[in-house]
Image (cartoon, helix red, strand yellow):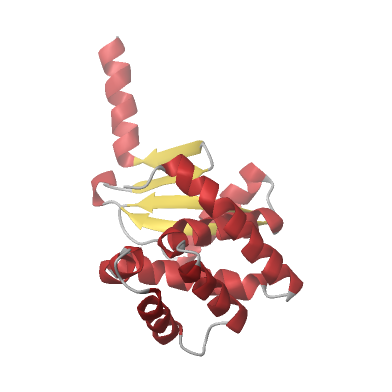
Length: 184
């Protein structure tokens, strides 16, 4: 398990360098889309993460795998950046670097990240309603939704924006009702 403070300290300069590179080439959104895709790939494939994290695997093998996984669809600048991470033995920090890049990109675009947890997947109309509510609360320019499913909520949603949490779930309402009844 990596130390969060040390990870953040290592990821920060690399993510800022990646943002600087993206801005100089006018590819910030393209890098953002590629970063999201690669993060989903890492989350879905533990073997890939384990392969990249393994210090006993030769850097050339990691580079070859990255080239195969990335294919021709990704920007050559981003590909070279990832290969540089292998050379610098920082590829195990790829996930926090990409997450930090996305955070910097949201900050640059005045976009907030709203983590929405619901009992069932939200429809497009429901997602739009959540976005409008978050826009009204935060006064941001845009909202990026990160949806999670938790069947234990029974119904409703929990919206987390930064440190602010809006609990409009049935489970939360039942908990609050229970607390009120027990305090009387």
